[in-house]
Length: 247
Image (cartoon, rainbow, N blue to C red; front, side, top):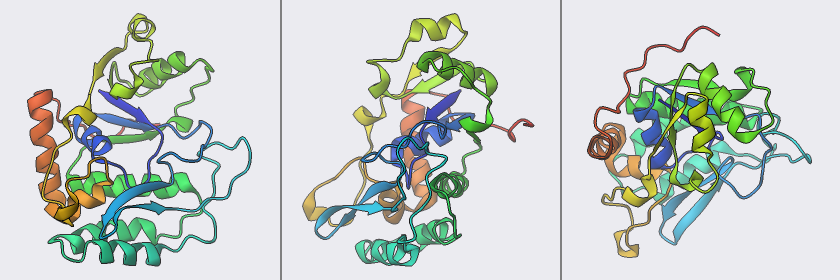
C-alpha cells in the first residue's frame, strides 16, 4: 500500500499513521510550491493557543517544491527553543527535541531535503518500516493528475493507494482501477485520537504537528496510539516493509 503527499514539515498525526500503515510513502516533490499549506509550516500548542512553526523560504514564481530553497532567515535554534518553551511542562519534550534537532540543524539548503530528513527521522522514531520515495526520482512524465498517481503507484510497485478523505471530491477511482490501482480511504480526520495535551484548560486541539503528541506521549506512546487506531480501522494494515527496491 502507498500513500502520496507533498513533503510536509513536522507532519500531523494523519501523515504519521501513513508511515505505519503503508509499505511506501511517496513525497510529491515535483509539483508547484504554494504558500499557505503545510510544506514549510505546521502548528504546535502554546500558552497562548496554537502557533505556527514556519520555515521561511525564498519564492520564485512557478518553482516546484523540489526547487524551493530555505531562506537565510531560518533559525533552527530559535525554533527549538520555542518548542521547548511551549512544552516545558510535558513529560517527553526532551525525547521529542532529540529527534527533531538532528534534522533541523543539519544545515539543509533545500526545503525538500529538510522535510525528507525530518520525515525519515520521525519514521525511524515511530518504528515505521516504510520505504520513502521522492516522486521526482520515479520518472513519471504524465501531466494528467490521475495518470500521474497511477504511474507513481506502478513505479513504486504498489497497487493499493491509501487516500485521504479530502481527495474524495476529485480522485478518479474508476480510472485508477482501470490502471490496476485500488483506493482505500483513510478518513483520519474523522477518527483523530485524543490524549492529554499541554495547556489542558484550552481544551483539546486536533490536527497539530506530531510534535504535540510526542511531547505528551513520547515516540513509543505515539506509535502505540496510532497503531491502536489503525488496527481498529483497518486490521493488519501496519507495514512490515523491507528496504526500498533498488533505483
